[in-house]
Length: 500
Ligand code: NAP
Ligand code: MG
Image 1 (cartoon, rainbow, N blue to C red):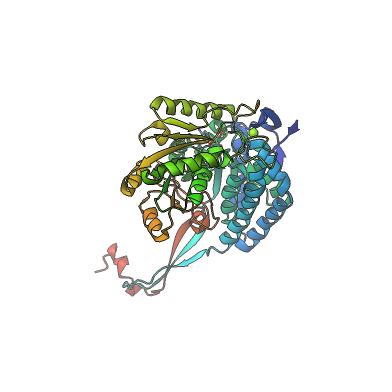
Image 2: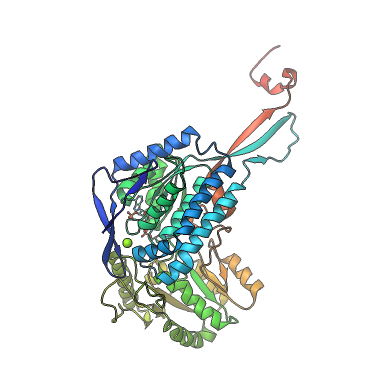
């Protein structure tokens, strides 16, 4: 079996304990590679390397254009490996090769380039509005990197998430310690290989493979780390936020969701039915912004559901390395148990199983679950309130649009959502009433590297992507330059002097 090493201070290395863990292909249940299990000591070495690299100014002191040049060498190395990365991502995380070769890898690599190019243009100098006070000064803001950042990422889009943490942190002048999820470490390690080929200064970019409870805890608590950016579940987000509080680290959190898809009476049903299914069953539902609650008007309910049943039949489960397969397994045995547990909960709560609900009979191995649709769901059932993170759609019938909006907003989450309608201005007006970070109109899931992504409510703190996401990797310094140049005019000094 392939034995991988992690990347600390510009070198590939084993864990100091020598311990390794096998990463498994969820479609075959077979181990594919061994990776080091980092200890607290390893994590400290990586953090110290990132701290030294930051404090030396070797990276933060470089011009944005030079940083961009170095990062574009990483981009070129990624581009060269595109087909290998697509296969690696499919094998490690259980995505279909269809998805990783059409989406995760090419789009992830493009996002890397776009974020670097956008970050290069963020001006360090920001003028401030002129205020006519009785003193004369020049005031401006200098945008500066935050320092040492930690990126902790999940298993559902391992490469894309690695890119979203790495490109913004580095182009804005920070150094980074990246921790991939234990189930899917391989493409983050491939990114480290590309960084090594690109000759980034040692310590600027480090990848630690290890558990959240050990490595993640050290990253979130170390006084040498200035910011922690986590993508993961809301439970982990709460925990990391608490851990980060002791050292008052900056945090950005991209967390869970239970997003609504609202179909209006005038929707084009060819688009709406496929959109609702794409919104839920893309990557077997393991997408944080998945539209797992679908609100359908009573007036078109029967037609919508009949079409939905027909279209679900075109989702094909099977060998993830076969281009014909359109849906893979969930990531692990533990996740499979969570998903099948929720299907049982849905039945017990009185929702009707409309289709799916089982493990597919024709696949002997792998953590597969059929695309599952519940109808007769009410918004207070657990399957409508809790994130399942698997291929389970809850359909909720509604009578009037106001009640659909009220139910859509009745959630602790607020990450994504969609409105399907032929009346685009009307759909935009509804989108504005949804308390959620992204709303698609007549579409789902498309994320644009130039547009901010993140959550309202318990779906997160801060934004990733676009100018808003890049600014999360900077802090502002106000510089005040006195232009009075005359002690007599500086009457405010007299607040403390009595020269009478
Ligand atoms: P998770 O269990 O929260 O894990 C996410 C990451 O956090 C992993 O690297 C994990 O390490 C680490 N971690 C776990 N416990 C930790 C701790 N105590 N301290 C520090 N780090 C810790 O989430 P997941 O199950 O991998 O991913 C699924 C969740 O992520 C879903 O809820 C989904 O909605 C959310 N998600 C959100 C977005 C978004 O952009 N908003 C995107 C993707 C996924 P280990 O792997 O070693 O446990
Ligand atoms: Mg794996």
